[in-house]
Length: 103
Image (cartoon, rainbow, N blue to C red; front, side, top):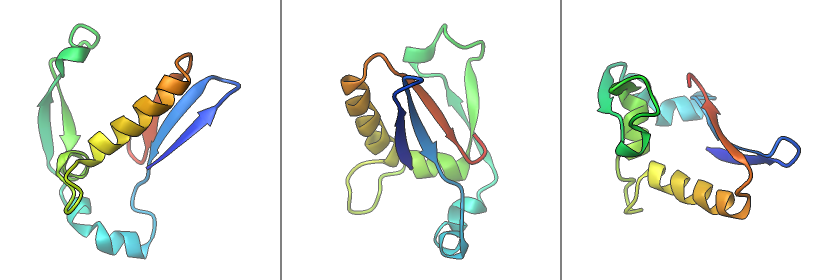
């Protein structure tokens, strides 16, 4: 993933890549073939802000975000959240956008 800042539009963008090359394809094959989805309940912090009670995650993407990384003791989601929060603390007037492959 990568994080960019647009000072003109006052935008922080979190970008997640898809499988982009043969090396990545080989290392991500397990996630690429997990085509099932997981139903996820809406977090309390988002309740009342969305018109749905749950949403679906591609299982490979879900596992990428929420499974603990070997040897790191944390998840990719926690890593991204920490990075985004630290940037938004510096630029509190910016909006956050999240984009990437199939999002």
